Length: 206
Image (cartoon, rainbow, N blue to C red; front, side):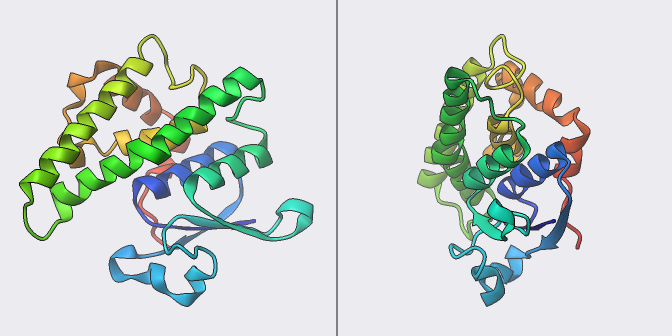
């Protein structure tokens, strides 16, 4: 059994999509970040950086429990545990790895800043809005080019898609019109057609 601690954010969606896609049995625990539940000592014991999501796998390596935070680490762990969504052939493996790192290092953090300054900042800051919206468009352009002629970011469905898609799916927070990026627009609809993705996008209710 995997205990899964989450909230309804792109980073939370990444891991729930992966759990659903792999068919893992898990118990969902809602961490209300709007009410600072991520700072409770019991959650910090699992996720010392006070960020969701986090997991505790009670059947971890050598049959011992293991707790993990950071979505890239969790996705890689679940891919290895399940033997799914991460290729083993070296060239394909590193293609997926580099796009996972692209999401973690740029697509997520920069779009997260766009979300903050477009929707949540207490007062408008034009410089920040302009900076992060421009960067959002640049990153969408990179993704659109990568998806040309491909159904998925690295040809076959992988953890790179589970990392990237939830951020692209929040395009309205980034002031992005998906039709400007037709390959990404088609990709979003393609990903949303999977039942495990629809389940993974649900707001945690327990």
